[in-house]
Amino acid sequence: MIAAGGDYRVPIPAVPRDLSVARESSYSLRVSWRRIDDATAGYDLQRATGAADFRFLVHRANPVHDYTNTGLASDTTYRYRVRACNDSGCSRYSNARSGTTAEFSLLAVPNPPVITSVIAVFQLNIKWTNVPGATAGYVLARSTSAAGVYAAIARPGQNVTTYADNGLAGNTTYYYKVKACDKSGCSAYSAFQSASTPNTLNPSAPVLALAAAKP
Image (cartoon, rainbow, N blue to C red; front, side, top):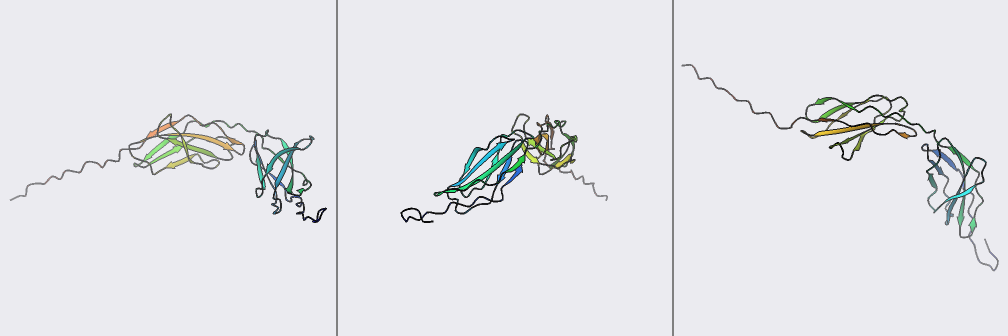
């Protein structure tokens, strides 16, 4: 493009295409669009709710061409549109696309897990109650002290209510908690349950008794 005075100007970017809105949870939506190479000044994203007017939401620097919008209300529809910009200006806004956050679901907290058996020295078998609606399964966490930091060790799927925790240290007490999850999130963790693995020391060596040889 030749501007007044004969100076060359880069053309304004094309309108972004393929805008999409994907549900992530009861409080977030992910918005994405096709990247435009000459959008050197990035993108302006707007949002609207219901019949309200669009308002500026966020600016994304090129080459980023997506945005996860968090802190939203559950079970609510939001509309988005985006434009591309460079030093010459900005395109018009794209056609709007909408997405709806998930309905909030408060799952029941599972009962404390039960250690059903101790297998040799290195494994504890754990079981918990099934929670209706736990469509995303469970998170099982473990610690080596009741009030310590619990780290997630397994994410069993829906209707899976057992786990074999192996590779453990001998003569050690382990503490377990479990929580149930669906597409909106997870319940609080259950109360803890604990069990100890046996001692790893080898048993005493047998005593060999020798009988006197008969003459």
